[in-house]
Image (cartoon, rainbow, N blue to C red; front, side, top):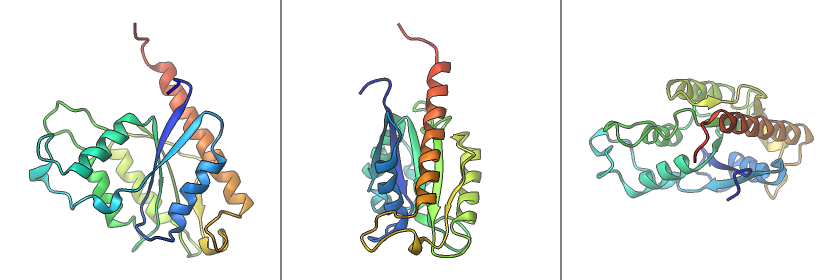
Length: 198
């Protein structure tokens, strides 16, 4: 992969087959700016409940190990979250718990300084506002490099997609593109600040 290409791992916090959040990530692939490649993660259902006793390099469940490796390899993350009970879904928080640790001090922290962009869709008038706020707190703790603006909160999401799950709202499309441009800028800044290697 060319150094100029930015590889983004996209994670939907919804397991629902017709999820607007997953559809939002598919839309992101179509509006991604030049040089940005988006890979949609589809293994969230396979991540087991977090268990500290198993959170070591030798004992972690295989789906967790694969997710950690994919996050480490990616240049950035794009997360789309629905809102459940004024917060993010438990399956998403659970996955983030698994990938935020390094108890042995030998592996590195997959989320540390990782550029991250957030979005989210919900059928309510407030969209995913509270879920995104909860996610921002998580990424504050992990010391990730979070895109602050634009905030892409897709409220009344059932009005933004057609019956085939295609994003048809021009405002959401523009904001999603702007979010990806800001994420690309984060990665480019991090690359320019990285020490040169021989």
